[in-house]
Length: 83
Image (cartoon, rainbow, N blue to C red; front, side, top):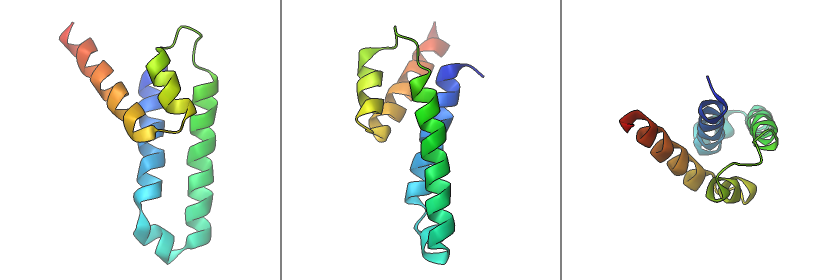
C-alpha cells in the first residue's frame, strides 16, 4: 500500500471512529482512546508527506478537514485508475 492509500485508510478510520456514536455511548473512555489512536496514526502519516504533496490536500489535512481530504483522495485514486 502506498502513502496515499495509507492516508486514505487513516482518514476514513478517524472519520469512522468520530461517527460511531453507539461506541461512544457504550464506552466513552474506550471511544476516546480509539479516537486518540486514530488521530495519532493520521498525524504520523501527515507528517511523513513529501514536500511536493498537492497543496490542496495538505491544506485539508492541516486544517483537519478530513471529509474534504477523503474526497480529494478518493477523486485522486479514481483519476489514477482512469489513466
